[in-house]
Image 1 (spheres, rainbow, N blue to C red):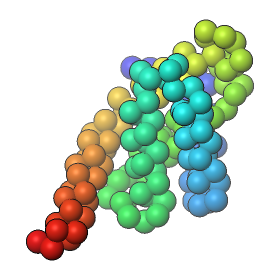
Image 2: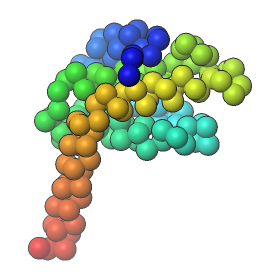
Image 3: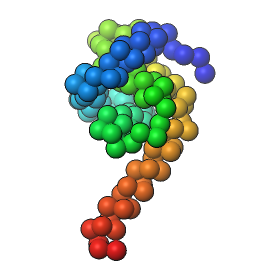
Image 4: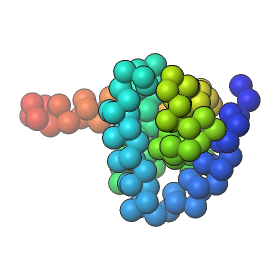
Length: 137
């Protein structure tokens, strides 16, 4: 799949903010807000958005570092694109404004699928360990 038009500028912004905890957290929070506001319109990629957010949050907190920085930047670039109201198809264009957002999220998710699957496995292991600690096993 070819990189969507306009995605490169989001990647550059993601590269510039990836080392800045405050700016990265701001993008994550804005992506959470937008995904909740546009829930019905973004349903097709809502799980992917949640996974990207959780992966970047875990990386930012230092909890999950066994992932290439390139993957984090690519995921963060998708969130940067998502929160930009004036991307290739402005969000205020009713019916069309979120199509490009869905395309970018799908593109990114497919391009880093292997790393997402490893992160998902890590999340499951963390949940199991947490359960075992709570149960005293």
